[in-house]
Length: 176
Image (cartoon, rainbow, N blue to C red; front, side, top):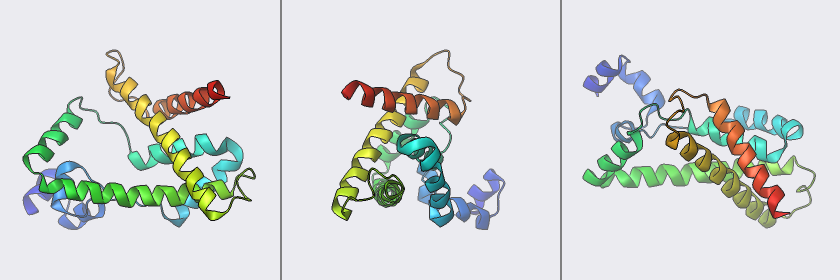
């Protein structure tokens, strides 16, 4: 830990503000918590921006900026292939984060009059579907960004967010 902290030019204590374990740092699993304040801020966005824009914004905020190194994803996959025990940490974080995001989206849906009369089970199903749509749109926007040779690697998350919102809303319009 001391060597990693020294290379990163942070104290070991600061290191653990960002990563739960050394293994989490190796594969880039940073601790993310939406929290009550973050959720309250997102709830305020729903009334002004709508559910799709708000959930995409939430996902991009949780995800963080895109990788600036083109091979980062492949590097992480190679680490997981070489050290399969790290996969359980990644899956555990993914499961925890998915549950937290689903809860947050349910809270956001309660702010939308179209969902306020839903029973809890219906709201949970709606939250899963909204999260899947928005998550898919974010994924597609990131894939476009990564595949575009002329795209600067330091593109803003604002551009990714804008593109993901456009993809989700365009799809919904075509499905109507």
